Image (tube, rainbow, N blue to C red; front, side, top):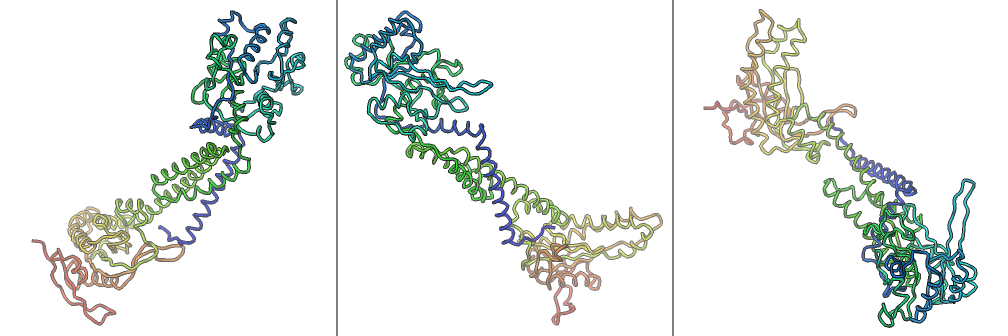
Amino acid sequence: MVRRSIPGLSSAHGALSGGMLAIGAALVIGLLSLTAIVRDLDGRSFDYLSTIDPALPEQPGITLIAIDEPSMDAIGMQWPWPRSQHAELIRQLRDAGTKAIAFDIVFAEPTDPEQDQAFANAMGPDIILATDESLIERPYGSTLVRTEPLPALVEAGAQMGVASLSMDGDGVLRNMPRYRDGFMATLLETITGEVVTEKQLLRRIQHFGPAGSYPTISYYQALNPETYLPPGYLKDQIVMVGFALQANAEVGAGGVDAFETAYTLRSGQLTPGIEVQATIFDNLRTGLSIGQSPPWLSLVLIVLAAAFALVVSRPRAPLKKALLLSATVLGIVTTGWLMLRFGRFWISPVAPSAALILGVAAIATRDFAKEQRRRREVQNAFGQYLAPEMVQKIADDPSLLNLGGESRELTILFSDIRGFTSISEAMSHDPQGLTRMINAILTPLSNIILRHGGTIDKYMGDCVMAFWNAPLDDPDHGLHALEAAREMLEEMDQINRDIQAMLPDGANIPVIRMGIGVNTGTCVVGNMGSDRRFDYSVLGDAVNLASRLEGQCKEQGVDILVGQATVNAASSLTFRKVADIQVKGRSATEPTYTLAAQS
């Protein structure tokens, strides 16, 4: 039977279980956020969001001089080139009016002494050379190796800075290099005198575009700017020399000095190292780098998102719940992008969104299990005395039920088999056969009641009690009860034939008949019984009168007696008044009717 729940207790229990599920979702996502999988997802979300309408510097801070395939063709040599060639490049760039020249190349090994000396003679405070720092892992331990330019170059006045870059676990470059003497930090200090702080380095890189976003000229063009470049093109420019080979552009090529950046997710292309360095320089110069949220803030957001799953889970309709969930996740992602775009602060939406989705999924799973359990309870409770389509209707919409007890107008029917005592005596030696026989009588009668929308209250031996207009509303309950009564009487001929076929040989019993009492009135209907066992039943004076009417059928010589209220409720039928009867417990007489014979 469907148990009546206490609303306050039920809602409190639901809120408690929902809260526990939300806490569980927060714990699961909090632990998962420490794994490489979630960190990679965080990185991919940063790549995507940071490249949507990114903040851009007013002007690129660096012009790139690319050591590329056209330059190799023009110079007629493969790399490495004589260092006197670089000295000539420096002379041409200075003559063109450049402010500073950075080489994203580590000149650590000596070559021809004359070539090295020519290059050293070109050094000065406007030259910044790259230094490399790498961690070499060996079975016995790790070794940090720093590779610096030739001492003669530094002694000749050149500046140097560490150009090494650190990629995330998925191989994408997202974070600023952490070196206080970094390559671009040294360049910025050389140009502006501004010393880069550690706070500026503990941030993420805002990439400004895919490969090719910075103004770039080929090395051979810079060797002869008067021929290949517009007048004054390099005046007051900061330039950087480095590799930008097309052979290194594809991600799968694994090229030298080319990196996966945030834009690789969209373009599928690697970005040359000199362009990455130029991006780092502009991040430092313009303050467009992106701050990172501390771990505790991420955990707080995970908890808040998991808690908000309780709100998202409130709509009962799956479509509304899905739309609210989608809107909330979109809101989290949008907020993350707004913080990144205008607040220059990165809060990953991955973990909060995952906590929200997991929380909603957990609560939805709980609700689904409760729904299935409730459906089973409805099936078990009403399946025996309601038509299947009515049971399904209740299962689909529990709000149709009020099992706690209510007063409402019902039509009650009592039916009793006359002559069943003779059957019991004839079958006294065969109790199993008697059971089959009573089932053969009650089954078709019950089917008729259910077919007309009635609720079977109980069986009392060979008597059936049923009512209409509960648990589901039935505006024509009086009419439907009488139609069922009429069909039940019509079924008696077939029932008698079936019984005769079941009797043992030699048994002779009279034809059985049925008396039916039908009455309409206000009753109390709901779950009735003890805390351990109860039934969905009705109580009221109208019930007692219906029982009395059924008992008067034999005395009045009719098969059905109908109360006045039922006659009033079924005005479309024709009745014949039988008598005014005295009902036990009442001082006034009760008019009774029977259905008029159909013409």
